[in-house]
Structure formats: structure tokens, C-alpha cells
Image: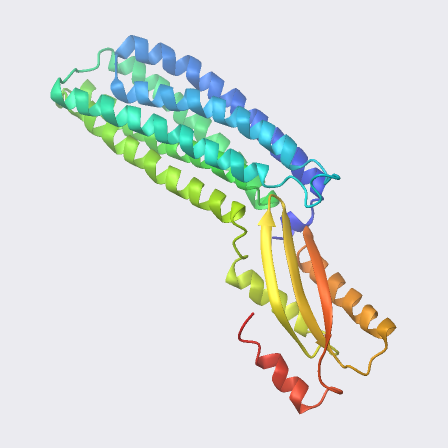
Length: 313
């Protein structure tokens, strides 16, 4: 969290664009070397990995466009910004991976019906080892960026490549088994397993994207932190109607605070500004709206009880 706070909105956007450009380049390199390996070996598992890398390159390109749009400042037609472009990109990624997983599953079942043993598996092993090394490096880079920015689009993109690492590890096992003459079905088995891994990734990506598009509340821990920061101000008697949502890099937080009704409008405004400042330090990229309501007269026992009685937020 400390690292994330140290970056401005523009710095986060720059990091997101940089890592996504890198993922496109890595995916294209993997497409090239896997094409050679598949033609040379005929492995259906390698075919699945090749197809996935091709789709990864396309999806990463779409993600780059989505990120570029998502970090565009709010304008007259989009006063809340363009952050949900990240979620749209996530849904597109999920659809692309679904097609890849289904195709690979069908191909693997056909290999069960008509077994074909891959040839020249040693060449395939070399290519897969290179693929694992490249992809693992990319995933590590992406995770660092996600930790610093909280980007859904980069996180979804990273899930592709996490699946690729697992996929390539499975292919490596498959080709090694073939190299040692352990049955013709190993390749098909790994293909089915890889299709399952891709399917699991689809669920995770789509779920996160739908949460953002449907304005799901922030995590309970974050909501509790908001309450803690707000009620820490000695002149705040309570809060209610807390509502939150996330759009790209920006969180939207709005709620009502209860203040002593005898306070002047100027003092109530000063308290509201102070609370907003405290929240902005805890949630630096949040858009915060505070409405002031009359509470109890003075900081008496009723007001103290009010602070612990907000079960609805």
C-alpha cells in the first residue's frame, strides 16, 4: 500500500501502459517460437499453448487500448471518468480465453479418440523452457505493477500469463513423458488439464469485471477503514448511508456525517473538509462526497452511543 500511495494518477497510468506494451511484445515473441515448435513436433498441447499466446497478444493489445482510454481525464460527457473501460477489456479477455479453452478441449478429446504421439519432443522441450522463463518474468513484472496501481486490466492480463506458466509446465511434463516413451495419451491429458486451467481464469477475470461494472461495494476491510477514519474526528457524532464503488483506478466514496446541530455552517464545512482530507490521505485516488446532517446537541453520551450504533453502514 505504501508503494501505491507514492504514485500519482499519471504515474500509475504510465506504468500500466508500459507493462502492457511489454506484454504485447513478449506474447508476439512466444507466438513466433511456439509456431516453430508446434510445426516441428505436432504436439496438441503446444498447439494449445500457441493459440493461447496468439490470443494473449491480441488481448494485451486490446488491454493497451482500454488502459489508454481508462486513464483519460473526465470530460463533459463522462464526468465520472473512463475507468470502466478496464472492466470492458476484462470481459473481452474472458471471452477470448473461453474460445481458446473450448478449442483446446475439443482438440484434446480428438487426440484421445485418435492418439498421435508428438515427434521431435526434445526441440519442443527447449522452446517450452524458454517460454516458461519469459512468461514468469512478465508475470512478476505485472504483479509489481498491480501492487502499485491496483489496475483490474493489468491484473486480468496477468491471469493469462499465470495460466501460461502452468500451461507450459504441463506441456513440459507431457513432452518429457513422450521423450521417455510413456504413452501417446500424455499429450491429450495435458491438453484437457490446460483447458481446465484456462476455464478457471475466465471465471476469475469475468467476476472481477462484472463487480466493477455493477458498482459492487468496496471490500469490507476498506469500508471499515473509511468508518474508522471518519469517526476519528472528535466532532463527528456518527455517519450513515455509506456507499462506495470503484471505476478503474478511482474509488468513489460518499456518506452522511452527523454533526452538532448548533454548529455554524462555516464550522460544519471546516469539519467536513478535515474529514475529507483525512480520507484522501488514506485513499489517495478516491473521489469523496460528504453530506452533513444534524446529530445530537454536543458530544454527550447520546453522541458517543451513536458512533457505535451504525450497524447499517
